[in-house]
Image (cartoon, rainbow, N blue to C red; front, side, top):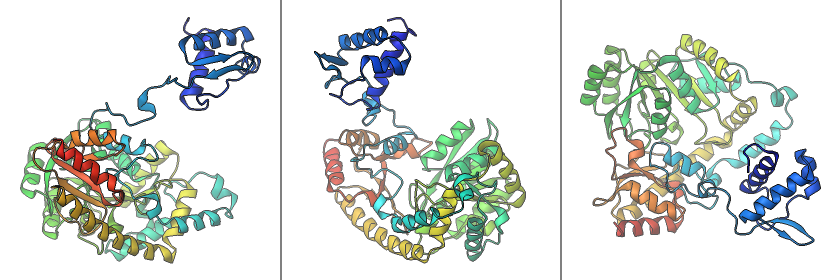
Length: 461
């Protein structure tokens, strides 16, 4: 069939309907005359297209009844409807597998809580209240720095932590990831060097590589980066930026010690290093641990965060806290790239829930629930020979070593066949030295099948 012909256009239109499941197997196709009118072609063109698809077995004709989608047809790639088993295990692997997983998939490798663990009652109440809001809130663009009420609330929280800032030093963004992206656009140029922990959150790597910078990694200890190797990296590679989680580090769950924090800041000052401190897991700590940003006072440390882990990943909003002059420049950059701040609907929902007294009680109950699950999951994993690197103070991650010579990527691929998404160690490692490690999300491990599949995978090594 000639590419671009009218018949080919009709064929492509039908194939798209089938591949998107707008037309299901066994379902009747539009009538010839009706589809001809829709496509603005002659009925004979539709007849030719239907005949072509019938010859390929995609559809079939039933005498006197019309054309129907064949029940055995599969005119789309398996990867469009199931796990991408042939995808390489890289920093995008866990994200793509988790986000695109089937509704019945088990996801102990994902980075969020189960939906029924979230404060949905408070969110529903906030949504009902939002329905009675002014038309402008439901219709207009967001202001350039984001909603003032939410910025004030965050600034008050930061003051309670010892970080003296006003709402003018808080910039709301459409997500935590976009907060990092804005800062990278502001501070980095292609070819610059950025320092990360090894291991580190895999999307740090993906985002930084999108900015075409060089990545240098420093091994992480249970109290923060290996400070001797950190200093060597600053001397040798002269990075302009360091990105880290100080509290409940992703993926390890570790916490920065005061001694390491002071040494990192002293070295940052000596080597003109700027630090992004991603504080997305702060609310999961039973009590605040040392923060680079509070010790530094926003001189060369930028704090970012979001609400996707505690409130909703569907209603996304992030924030940046930094020096006033940097916030001014970042605001202009946000206008250039997003034409304003995050959705007013999103920020009003988040403000409503955060300012509701039930949120504090929800988080307290959630921390207790996670403590129980961390202990239970750690015990079950240890029974399989899977050993937690440390027991975190809070949060939902366990960073574990696998027994023997088990390759985490191979185990993750085997689990994916059984509709289970795992997070193998090397997706978190710039040095690719975490072959035998895996990150587990304890909140996503209530189904016994997860442990059964892990046990079979380990036995088959």
